Structures are given as C-alpha cells and as structure tokens.
Amino acid sequence: METLDEATGKPEGSRPRKSRRLIPLTTLRHVRYEMAVVYRQMDRGKLENSDGTKRVFALRQIADVITLAEIESRIRRLEAGRPELLEAPRDDSDDDGDEIQAAQLANQAAA
Image (cartoon, rainbow, N blue to C red; front, side):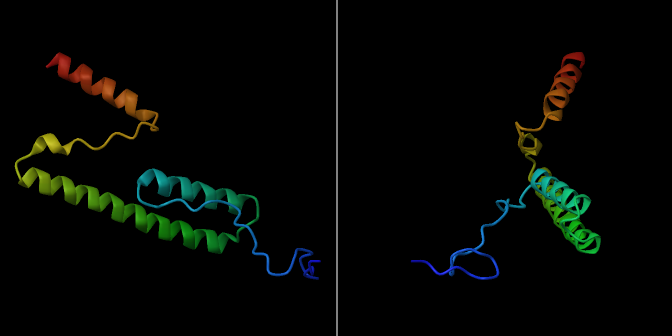
C-alpha cells in the first residue's frame, strides 16, 4: 500500500513531471523558439513579467554569442582562402530558405 503526500495527493517519493522538454540552445532557431515559450508563459500569467524579461535578456545574449561565433567562423574561412565554405548550413525547417535559394539561383542565372 502506498502512502500519499497530504500536500499533493500523490504517492510519496514520486517526482514531479517536467512540463516540457528542454531544447538545446545551440541555434538561433532554438533561441527564438524558447523566447516564444517565455512570452507565452508571461502572456498566460504562468511567469512573472520581471522573470520573463530576465530570461529573454539571457536568451538574447545567447543569440548574440551564436551569431558572433558564426561570423568568426566565416571570417576564418575567408582568411584561409576558402570562400566555397562560406555558405551557411541550410535549415530545412526554415520556410524562408526556399525563397532565398530561389533568389540566389535567379541572380546566378542573370549574371
């Protein structure tokens, strides 16, 4: 027979479940998604605005570091004389990518 916790009504020793999976904050897409999650939590009243603002500020700092790391990597490739490596990896889940690629192809065909 299990003993129930009076405060929660759940079996003692059970751990609370996390409400959502943690995503890695390794791309700008991940950071943007996390910012949206924080915004929605504030909008629904599940997160204090002051806490949400602090989290978004920290996420913005992470986004800046990701951006600067990509710029640094591209500069290194340029300095190494390998401009063919400058093309950023394509994120297939990005809807804007097809439009950008089509514009690049049109520019190449016009040249």
